[in-house]
Amino acid sequence: MNSIIQQLLDREAIRNCLARLARGEDRRSASLIRSCWWPDARFDYGVNSGDFAAYLAWVVPGAPAITDTQHALGQSHIELHGDTAKAETHVISYHRIDMGAGERDTCIGGRYLDTFAKKNDDWRIADRILLYDWEQDWGQAADWSKGVMGYPFTAEHFPGRANGDFSERWFAGAGK
Image (cartoon, rainbow, N blue to C red; front, side):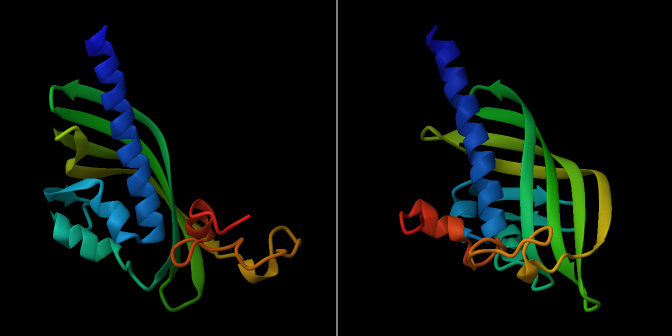
């Protein structure tokens, strides 16, 4: 029974790491991202690859042309092997991009192939490969300053994610 409980705890720690990383990427938070990767980790996203320092420099502060992101994680298939694990996690990532001709919304569907390592009861990514399954350009971005579906926002904190996200203050107890 103890080994089953330990496997459940390990799987939950891996899922928590994945969710924390997605949150860190969307908010361009170096501290959250660092808490998910081992310093000697490697990554390969097809369009960029290297060590963890290169990854962090790429994601934080992020490209000025990418004003907002949102990573929605799907199911994770996790195979535990002692203090290492392999995980495939489905991801849909939204990006608002301005390449000089106005903001556009785009979406990518893919899978993270992560190798995790457990050190001192802490699960983190040791290696990541991103596989791309599809990409869709949704066209000109909506003007969030006008609200949603014709309804104006009642406060400034509703739109936006990457910088100064309202959820940071909300978790800290300063929000409603």
